[in-house]
Length: 257
Image (cartoon, rainbow, N blue to C red; front, top):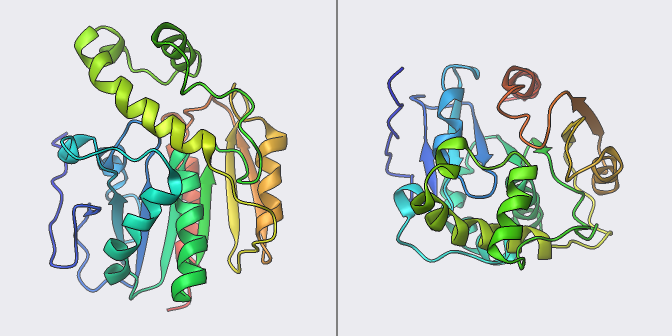
């Protein structure tokens, strides 16, 4: 299968990569990747979402096409830079999907957009992430290199091709440390209530995020909350993509245009 090229449009920036061709979309689905990854994570979703929906992946600095740019070490700092770049694309109904780190980024972005611009997603989908008010029980971003690597391996978060290359490990470590620091230090106090539905996905065998910490997302929606547990570990995105897309597509199909 050929890799899907990013479709540059006048409204795009380095932060938002359009992955499909959709003239005058009725809605936009924004996807936020997990730690250490970039927009290419979602290229296989092209063709699997409604034809009237534009698929856009949010690109964090420091990886893939933005490899030479400085990394962010806080969720808040990252979101503050995303906002001006995503605003031109929020002229249509939109849905957020965030995975692990992306779950926290998309939640904080939705919160800040609501409070500062009166804009809210039609639905927020978060996966493999603790609720925002909970502290990280086992932070790893300050561990020595050997322990940090062992922790990543336990999560099944290091592809074999990376583990087989010392050069790739050296490249990946600064990105992963920055991303884990951002995730593990992020907190949002109870009190904020989203005026949009929140759907949460979790892996039954996730060694980092258990069901109780997923269930706690319930505290942040004034509209509706749903928790879906699936087979798999922290990276069930790779094995249960169809289930995730099915839920997303149902939400996109229910948007009133």
